[in-house]
Image (cartoon, rainbow, N blue to C red; front, side, top):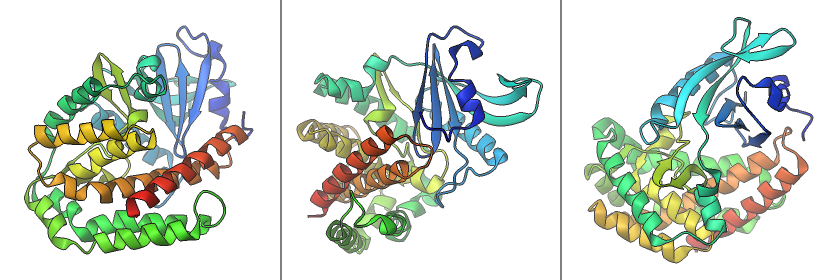
Length: 335
């Protein structure tokens, strides 16, 4: 366990400090979150970090984005996202929604069946086409109802998309040649992305066709639970330009993720099924570009996680190994 954890996280690693039955507490970290798995509930806190594309550096900002997380995720998981809470000092400890000084805010969620998380279903070799058909049946009406129109369409132009895509190369430049990402990969993927972004007509046709929506933004197996009802959780709440996107970018993330897990045929099925169900004949032309973008983003996040001081050595090694695999996949798409 890292020694760089906040005092309140260390406090709640003790199961006896919760006001409900908890046998054991598990801490999961990402580059932007601390997540405590405790009994029937999940408690999610935002790290006080600033990566440029997100800024959680003040308590008020973290409170605001906790509220955004609740509202936006209830679109697809109304039964999972319970409330936003204040964490308050209570003598030598802390209390949820207490009377003392507020030291942090967080989001409380209902614990889902961890054995039905899509990642675990994949690990057991149990993912089948019917699961993906259920995901498509969930996503198509979600995108149809999601906000769109002329204001959001601006986020699908090649100029707007290039901001998201090209900043990844700026943010990873200092990591090149230090493990996971080689100079050759960096150059090849960057060249491919810049060349594709010159296809103005492709992007503008998607905008005119109403395919730019208020999407999920982080659609991959780690954020999907297949527990009878399809639960797609943990959308992007911290930056609208990552969520306002072409639906092709959203579904490309899951298709890329299936490729990452060696399930390319299931990814192809997913895209065919979604394209037919959404009557989106233009999606395949955008798919490889957005797969490459999504793979590179996951590689970048792996690098950020591996270099975070609060992350322990085992998590660091895992993050670096995953980053290397994602960059290899992005290079494959670029090729």
